Amino acid sequence: MRLLHTSDWHLGHALYDTSREAEHAAFLGWLLETLEAQKVDALLVAGDIFDTANPSAEAQASWFRFIADARQRRPKLDIVVIGGNHDSAARLDAPDPLFKALEVRVVGGMPRARGEAVLERLLVPLRDAKGEVAAWVAAVPYLRPSDLPSVPEEAGDRLVEGVRAVYAEVLEGARAKRRPGQALVSMGHCYMVGTELSELSERRILGGNQHALPVDLFPEDVAYVALGHLHKAQRVGGREGVRYSGSPIPLSLSEAHYAHQVLLVELEGEQLGSVRPLHVPRTVDMLRVPSRDAATLDDVVQALEALPELEPESPDWRRPYLEVRVALPRPEPALRRKVEAALEGKAARLVKLTPAYTGTGDALADARPGLSLKERTPEDVFRARYARNYTEPPEPALLEAFHSLLTQVQEDAS
Ligand SMILES: [Mn+2]
Image (tube, rainbow, N blue to C red; front, side, top):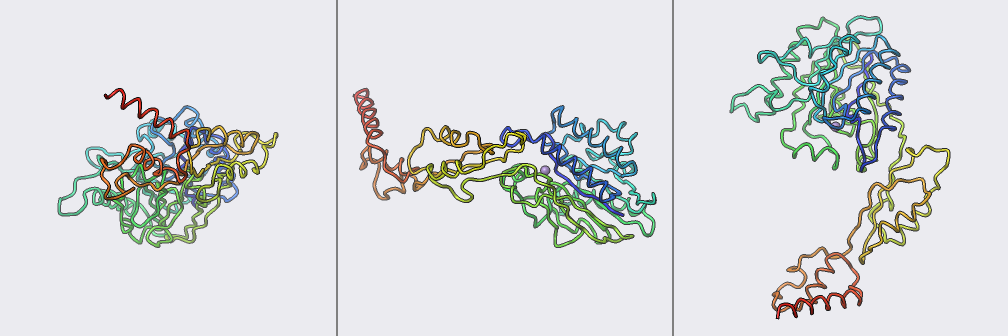
């Protein structure tokens, strides 16, 4: 049977205040086409449906619209969704009566009753094209510390061992359900050992690299593990069948170079057949000027003026996102205005303007070691502070202004 694995949609995301709604709509449209064209039997979405626990009405509408469209266009498609760390478990679970009627399984948070995992909710049979159960999926959502059973102190890291205990329990339940010939599949939204993070959009929510989970959480009898959380598609621990699909669109400028994809997974009986990435068409490019490091304002303005003009028939949202980095050998009070003027009528949207200071970066004590503050004139200190940011010396007018301020302060003090 054929699965399609995706995750980390982050519906409702904004890139420096610019809505991604049109890009998400393009992705979801492409996904619907792909589910049909590739004759997919089951869709697995491994968490972070929404960007925040409190998604906008628009973000929720596009989520519900997608589910309804998928159900309509592929009535026999199995749809299994788990909550991620960005999602509110309760909010994802709230429409469950409707999802149940549509035969869609959404597991927002870890279901427990009297301390026991509710296996009926966590275990989902997947049917092949003939309508036969061909696999069982353990749909374990993002686990919060309160979801974890207590483990003995000597067992090791409380979080890692707690997560291990949950997966062991749910996978054991799946093994009990499956018949010979049926594959074992797992889902998870978690951070695994030895994986690559994106600088901007994941690290800040992880709180460091502690509690990375070992890949042996998933024994070899699990044919495929559909993971979410990391935005870069990757295998885990060298295992072909333990994968992050990554996010379908770049969620920060640092993710621009990722090969955004969904994964088409072929199961053959109990075994993994193959995994094939399908690249998601990029609807909005991300540009950086200059392409690496930073350039002076004059060079940047020249490069910006060389960008293609905005084509009147192209929709506004298709304009590439643009990051500009300007090297500053001297202060440039009109920096933003000059950059914006150069971009007038261009097919680009300025989302980030980064000044790159060219100075030494030295603290005062490093500027002339061995010299105490008493031995320095105020102008010395001013120049050292200025050199920290800028390679060029201060302009005479600036020094003049500094001295007149200094005189004023000295006169007030006496
Ligand atoms: Mn995410």
